[in-house]
Image (tube, helix red, strand yellow):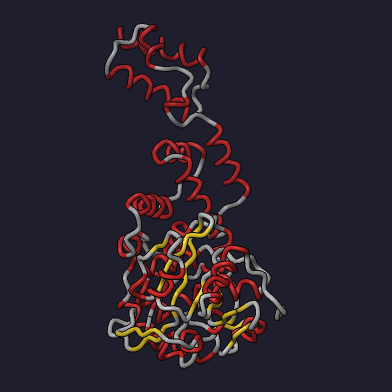
Length: 397
């Protein structure tokens, strides 16, 4: 499991070397160390340092800097066109809102900074000369595939209740087991999730839902879902998530449908985009009254479009309610003509045939489409023109 040395790319290594050459201490920290130890290529390289934000600004005065997080000790340094976050060692205390520390102090000891982090696997630092710094057994937990809080789990979740969902998200991503005391603290402190903004909750849930082991994080945990999404307390479909596309919104809809609850309320509470709420409304309607047969499927295609009907089919597949016949019917329905844009005739042609301009053109197009939907008419120019002529003749007669 342990690599004798971790590969640090040139840019973050140059930043680290620059700080060390200026007499400061600097380590790569957190997710990049965890991923490297697991043999993965990190997407970001975060660093932590003994340098204060003011000192970092002096050291990197020749660079473009991002200072949005400077109050919290974070300076972004642009190096070769990419931004890297470097944060001063911090000690945090108190958390009246169960999300943010009441006070924050800079420290000269990296051990203080690691001690404030959420999970052991995220609380490791690495230096190319000094090696791995692992004060809380994160490397062993990686080896044992365990999610464990840094220090007392009750305190960690009391400080920041969002860490509860972060722990579950890491379980969903990695497939690890949650250590017993951490699991107990999740259940005990779950009511504090009520203090967290829905935007932050949904941000974590989106990552969780599309992760490969989402079912592990979602099963049970009634105390969590009672606060976050009451609809999920009765959900039975967690183990079917992997049959669905990696679409967090669709997976949320599925879990609500599997619990026989409308997903619309959940989406409104989570402040999902209006477009996704409308999608949920349609899929819930189709879930309750599924179109069966080619003509009903074409009607649904005409009304809602191919994407939503495909989503409905995906939900039915997750529910084990799709057999070969239904798939064949869906394929046949899609192959046929189910929208005005697919008709092999247009308004100009109808007017050339003698149809008065205006609403009569629209009515005739709708009539021709309906005949095609029911397979009473083939969608060919010849058949459509003939049917249009007959319709116009009856209208004139």
